[in-house]
Image (cartoon, rainbow, N blue to C red; front, side):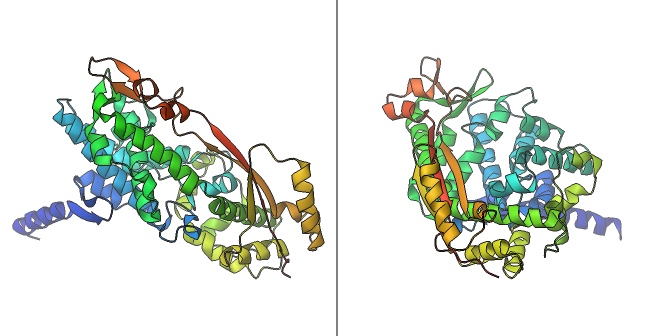
Length: 424
């Protein structure tokens, strides 16, 4: 290749790394640097295309088919908008910081397994997805010769300028702003829509803290109300909770069978996680474990559920067929933890359908939901008043419901298989 040809090739390659993506929520999203392009193009990020953002929510909202990849790009876009808004207010943000913050939010969901939060307790019990995300970010950093050092510090909260971490992870971060907007858009639940553009323009920095200008009070109030409504109407919808409980029981049963040596249809990577309970430390002692984790997505689970519907085990096959047919458990909410006066009659119903005592727990599931729109004590949202004082949003607002949003609402539920007939 001649020198002239090499220069032309290099220029074309550089131009190819400046991509524009058409997003249904925000319009055009720009990938503005070589690093961000390389990250988006990496298999760790591309895997997020195969993990739905809302897991099984499409059993309630058929349009909820968007992915973690959509969300990652959207959060990166909002981060860019927010940083530019801060720059326009005179805050010095270096180009490397700008890029690192976008990289941190782009990668913040790498550690999610299939169906996101649903299966964390089954596939890797006790290991939070944020911890796996950090492991994957550090591995990416090794592959990229340290280009993610600053992004990792921002993600961890160790970067000296603390407001960057708040923009990645806080009660007013780019993650929440995007998922509320995006989930509202794809589910059609318009109550969850927030004015992200105006909210971002109201952001400021005071004493190295991310704050909101006083004139943005109404936008923050709308944001918190939208979050509360989205939890009740989408994330904690009773039908979704029922489907999640069924999928969880399917995986618990499959894992029990796999651990006893039962032959189960599964992809190689999925089979590895079914047979073994891994800890966070195993990523260090088993270098190929990260590759196996990155091989997992929603397709592994659905393929197995489809295969297991004809398995000889009646519990596993029945649960799989029911989920595939959307023949979901009946679910009832309670204000207090349900006692034996509620559970025992349900056990008796299941026994009458022919279930043994050992089989009943798979078809009678209890749980609880917690909804707190604003955790005042943990991570306050600060409002910068016109006189320069910083107040908690609950103190700055004259809307009494803001204080009410700080209270934790806890509900209990019981799911059970009504009119179940075990296969086999």
